[in-house]
Length: 83
Image 1: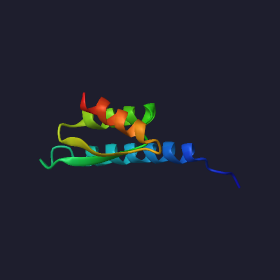
Image 2: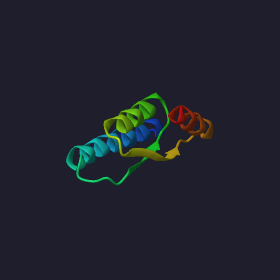
Image 3: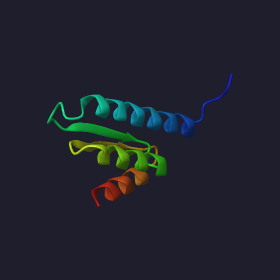
């Protein structure tokens, strides 16, 4: 039995969230004018990259929640996404 580290869990969660979001965008593109609200869990380079890709995928996507184990990373991510 392998041990899952916190980093592995966060990376896996980020990838799962990104894949799920892109699947929703593919099926719902053009069908709704409502905003798609997305939360970012894990604000490292991979998480920020996935969030940027998600926001760039469609005009009605917005990041509404940001979370990370390290609060300073979450603050930095919010500042980078706002810029």
